Amino acid sequence: MLYPSIDELLKVIDSKYSLVTISARRARQFQEDEDPLLEKYLSDKYVGKSLEEIYDGVLKIKKSSDQD
Image 1 (cartoon, rainbow, N blue to C red):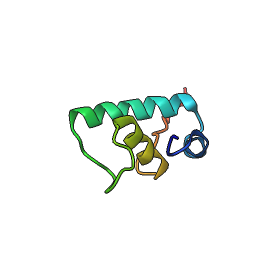
Image 2: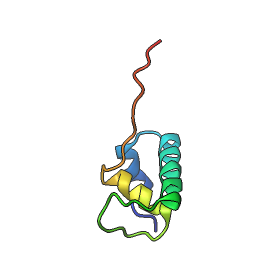
Image 3: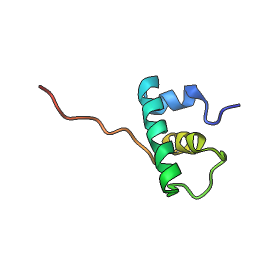
């Protein structure tokens, strides 16, 4: 079972595409330099850890202010 669930994650970030992009980018950062943003993780894998960070509100999406 996936924790946190997709339904719960989509309450934080409203796009599956954005969710995948952000979690993959953060997982790559974990591989290069393991710099935890939370004290304790339930997951042992990098993608799971990044999803936990998103769910806890530590990792957020940055909205572009470009309005051409």
